[in-house]
Image 1 (tube, rainbow, N blue to C red):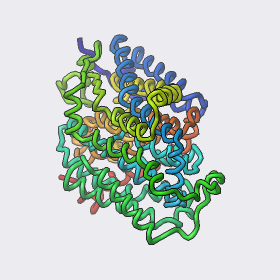
Image 2 (image 1 turned 135 degrees about the horizontal axis):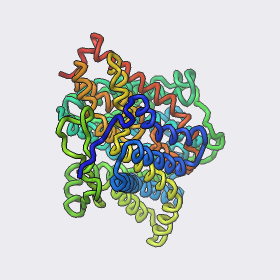
Image 3 (image 1 turned 90 degrees about the vertical axis):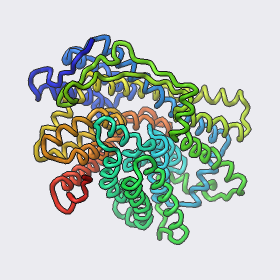
Image 4 (image 1 turned 120 degrees about the horizontal axis):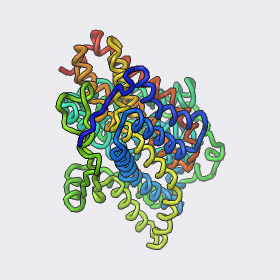
Length: 547
């Protein structure tokens, strides 16, 4: 039995849009205004989304229930699996005192917190985005920043702001490759078009994130480092995206950015060291202590292992090998090939949506992180019983985060399969001459709701193609804009905020994080929208559009 989505269930587009936006308003309002604990907010938002799906959109109750369980399952695995094992690795290094050594070494290499933001949150975070995605970069960089003396709010917020420009090519190009599959457009052309939009922001973001931390004066004090890190990322991003494809964009660009910034620091230092937020971190003897090479190797070893194994796990050949050993796919009962998307969101006679839950326990990124943690634990001389105890303690620590992520993904899946997201998207699509700008914000909305650039491309990619063709715009331009506009929504989605708060042991303060990053998210998304509008309408920007 098929159930067809209805994008105007109240027979009034304005009222239908209002009711479709209700779950988002309730979710964000309860977090930012009512200051509810985020797992309660997520569950409340999910309840409202289910009520809208059942009573306004007429979604069958069995399909709605199956959608909720499907989304919650995806939230726990693979996303929750990544967070659990990453925090486990982090706790192992803390218990052995090695994270303190790592903090000291980083503080000696780059004592200025502004440089630390650029090097760790932007450059190093981009590597993890390209290799793994799914919140990994925010979790790693936020955990490192807080140990370097940043307050929890700054560690979370700055990591979220920095994790923008790489997102469209995250997890070895998955968002762009998925966009190509959904729209039927050429993946290399989409990669090239995104590579003619994002480099502007790759150059801007290092300046922006330091400005968010210190203001204009503090930013100008480290402009050479911000410029070098941004330019060394932007240029390879453009070249690889245009002349190779989406697969290695972030990894190559991140390595170039880290190397160029490190090289600059050998010849240039800021005139004045900006004070740390936590005075104790700056004045601590630990920050000035020098360790022997053997101790530094021990401190860096878990993170080098993590980087190597996450990269290895992300390779298509590795995934194929491990999936061949243990990967199980389960069509979701009452949902698989039940929901029928209809024009203008989907082509005429489109196949019903698939709903297949994949349990790829070996090839999942979280499993690679777990292997890195176990190997690191062995090298750090933990006994098996100690590893088991710390793992159980970690599970207790992140329990509310796992509930929140499961509820958030369930909410996102309910809005997707009920059609409420499409109603919001259509409202933005009917904006005529402003569509290049508003279509870019549609990508932002998709990521803010789903927590994933890939999911946003699945949700709105085909709508972007249909709307752009009806308006005489390039579908390559607008579909790429869905992905590049979407990257700025990454910092306000509840999933990423929960990951950041969990990594910094600041769970329960998600409303403060949301308020910290919201302006930056919307302002950067608007700047992407302006660029896309110029590329659609104004020479010489129009000459940048891939044909």
